[in-house]
Image (cartoon, rainbow, N blue to C red; front, side):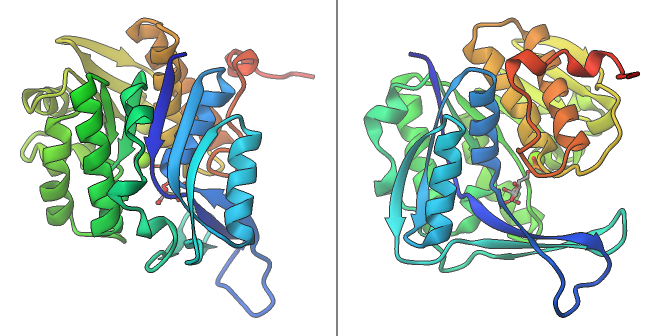
Length: 311
Ligand code: CKP
Ligand code: MG
């Protein structure tokens, strides 16, 4: 069976449903986040096989993470760890501005190590998907990603990398320096324009950024342009993909949704045009619904956004 394998940290989110500063007694909604597990869920909902590798706490939040991922049909390869689950606090300071804070040091997910990566599982995958978040979590997670890429490259498994720069975790300089060697060994790279400039400084337009990435080694670069869709350079051929217009409710998770749509179609053997089309449809679902992954579509729902409901 053709499956995607991904490695990363899934965290608990405490999100304020109301707009305004946090006050005593405010409600906080419990959710789950994590770029790599978001992608795994998105692929699984579209009928693809996805395996997520990571460390989870031995407490109730660790149980919750595994229960939800498994309920979504994702295969989990989890090392249980006595350390707590990482948290992400999200405050909706105004309707359009949020403040977020991570509590993700000395946590289960950040104690991931190279020994946690099972070789046959990665070597047997159709694609390995990683993001720039995991290497930012520390020495152990960074080595785990390098180990996964070593196994994939040796086995001829294509590597997909989403740069996913997080300014709360490291500086642009640190990120550029750490991600460049991973990018050089990747086959397919996803990035927003700002993220692409971390590795291709001086370039500006999506076409230049994609070309700059491919000059470093990958055969494919997909520049995610949000409401403007995406530009992809795949095996030397350029593709322009417009977005699906929707009302934005919550843009977190849009990038992961896009990647999930693209990779699910890649697993299904679909051509680039179809991969990019499904990618923007998943991105639209993610921004039009609340939660990072909860609103992602099943395959039967992909056409839902093509027409408006006048009922
Ligand atoms: O780039 P995206 O908005 O798609 O990524 C969102 C995820 O893993 C989210 O689930 C969050 O917890 C994180 O990125 C992160 O660690 O920042
Ligand atoms: Mg992203």
